[in-house]
Image (tube, rainbow, N blue to C red; front, side):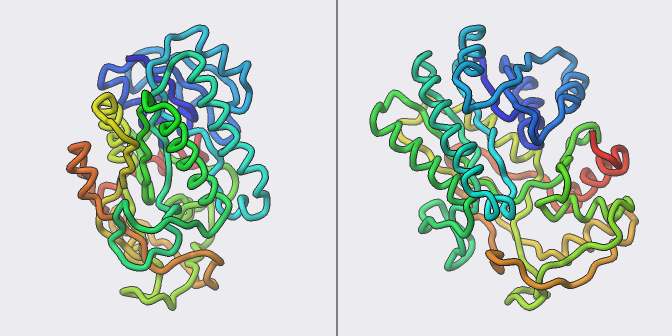
Length: 335
């Protein structure tokens, strides 16, 4: 099976490309490199021992997509390409709706032109908004607290409508929680442009000396130590969830919505302590005011993924921290 991976040079995309190739899939990477580096693909090539087809282009550009589909008989798409900074989405909502929502609509139209009707979409637990309880199951009410989350929610609805219009489509919506970690080789990992959006790069950059202090946003939540609790999942486990979804996509007779998480939440300070243990480095931190839109606790009920995909997270917090540190230590300035 030949798979187009949009956003395949990014953090989650590159790790997924590794596992897809190791599983025997033929992969084409499509990326505009606005938040990724071609170096990540070069390193993936070293990991898997083969050359990877890479096409630079934008999902909003039909000519770019036609170039891909004319040159390759694509059987399925794993769709990662999207902007993902919550803060930026609040400041520039139209940018997010254009790239994430309009881009997906264009992608689906071109896929249909070439009779490619299988898509695994990179969604997010942000579509649950502020959940009324935890753990979060797939049938929870949907809402979003920022334009980034709404863009994911809108794309989910678009893909459901595409299926309703033509049930030949095979659609899997993977809602994942908080990816952390890196490939065990330490050669690929999370390399955010500018200020990171996620906790772990802040921790690792502080440990390696790129940042003086970690800001912990809020210590007055109703949690074990007052700091926010999240479901952190190793990026390799997450990538494996995409491979499992692709393995089974032909069997699905409806739109499949699946959480990818560990089912366990850790607070910010618990993550800091775990990282200090794994790295032997002290991570100085300071308490800062809560951020608008942040919630107290968010973690998955992953039982449906186990039932439907025969998938479950296998890597714990220690391995997440060890692999994150190995990546950062070997690549203090990223790619």
